[in-house]
Image (tube, rainbow, N blue to C red; front, side, top):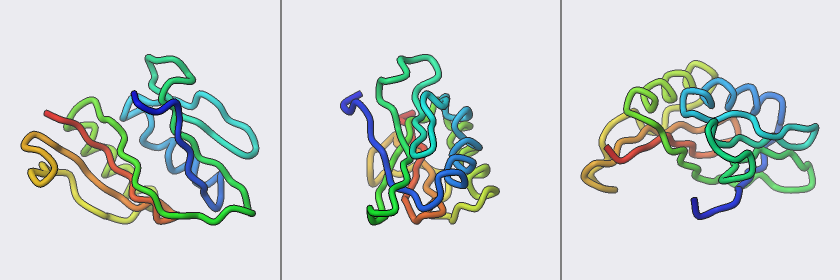
Length: 125
């Protein structure tokens, strides 16, 4: 993992956490930290502080749109991520499938979360 952690700003931490919680375990992630201003997810089998992904709320900060790709364990997990995300309020931004424009064996799915962040589950098969 290149990054120690990354966090994105969200408009409603409770609603955003509920959304991300729906597919975190499908992709082998768990909540590693949570308080009134932030929640972080990390690899189920890893160190809680290694490569964590966070959601944070700060009304003084603008919500910019980012792209975050979660590493998926297999193709079925990518499909489940996509279905669960859509069922929980995400907007389609790219159905599950191979993306040869990225790499011959790249498989991914994209959704827009409630704040418009481009969230992806992907793997190299």
